Length: 299
Image (cartoon, rainbow, N blue to C red):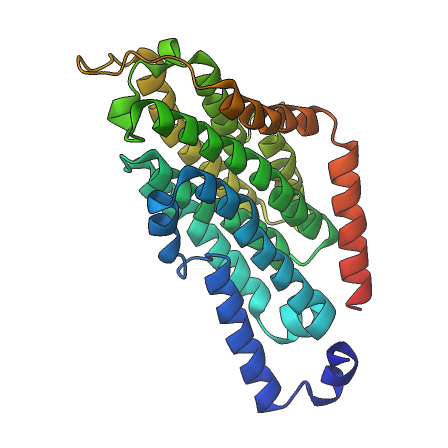
């Protein structure tokens, strides 16, 4: 009903004000820079299973809501052309990618590090939406699905770490590569997926996002996306270096690997990271079909 009636009153101040308020509200819900300040504390202080659930679902629902709101209710012409939201989304997305990744580098709490990483990943999704092209929206939908898998795996792995050693501070993870090899391997695979290294799912969505920028001749945006991946490499490498090259503290727990009940769901997500990174037919096909429906329905 709204989609049918709004074109008749689209030029009124009331509709434009409502559009603005709804956009800000959804941006707050999905932790879009600079409305993201709630996320680091929410992820850092929540139990790991809750953090895994939030990272895999909460912001993803908000991205879905943003897509439906912009493309189906108001339409792509009004949302991303009549209103200058395309430029705003691209700008805020890039600022989120770069600034949140920089802040993540200096975090000592791994859960807080991953929270800032999530702000950056939301930036990638919003950037794809702002490009307002079929490839861009396909990339945003792909990254929505892919990020749920990679962050879910990372937070479940951190839950296993917390269960065994009672801490998720980087310094306390020193030497865990030998004591918890399966958990740390899951953490590493999730980390390289955040960077966008093939054959993980992170590479697939970033590849399509770069393609979307190059299709429009926006090569500076492609370079900034790659810089965001380099920044992710820095904080992920800091974690890997501590895990495998760090010396365990003298008072470190002698307990070893996490129980099988925690490893199974973690590795289910890790294997999904690898599977959908190698066989992209299903994920890319569904994302492209959804982008067709969203863009087609908004014309």
